[in-house]
Image (cartoon, rainbow over all chains, first blue to last red; front, side, top):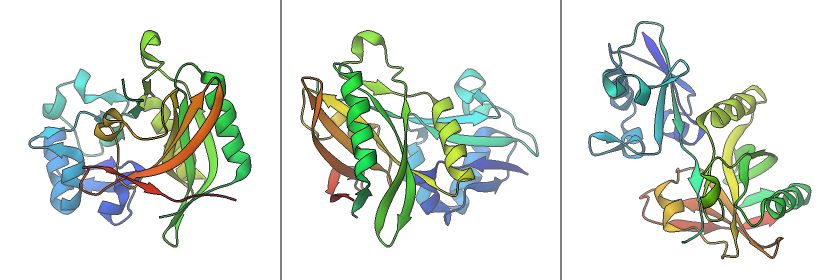
Length: 92
Length: 141
């Protein structure tokens, strides 16, 4: 079983847990397992079927965008982490 | 949801953002959510990594900064409760760019910085629907 560490602002949608154990052989399956357990997370992680642009997912230290994205394979014991991209700015 | 910010931390935020002028500056708010309010207990400035030529109106920080400071907050029994950033020569009101990149359950303190001096400072939170920001009372203590 793998685990996903949630960013602080999304923990209220998962019973205030910081880390959730998930099933799955890929990152996509692990995220489906996460959202299956805590459906309120979906709107803040996904825009339709795609991850929101500011949602980064790491397997260990690696950003999945530089691996195989949602198809990145994981193993039992893999530690995933969701890290929001923080950005801001005044009106142009 | 009132945001309680010690005067010492507000002064540090203003100093950091004035130093970053005419570029945008920013950082994280560490604290606790309690009794319907947010208590800011510490701040951590973070380097603006947006392309240099865009830093006068854009701000970004790396995922590594988030991970490092979230781990620090967790270890201290605190939380990452929000972040602060400046709007140089522009009102302390969230932009559409801010909204698209915003998180729920997160306090956004925005300071307008004019002529290298922090002016208006306001606190905001993204609505659950993600459609707008709602201003929160900013209580300096």
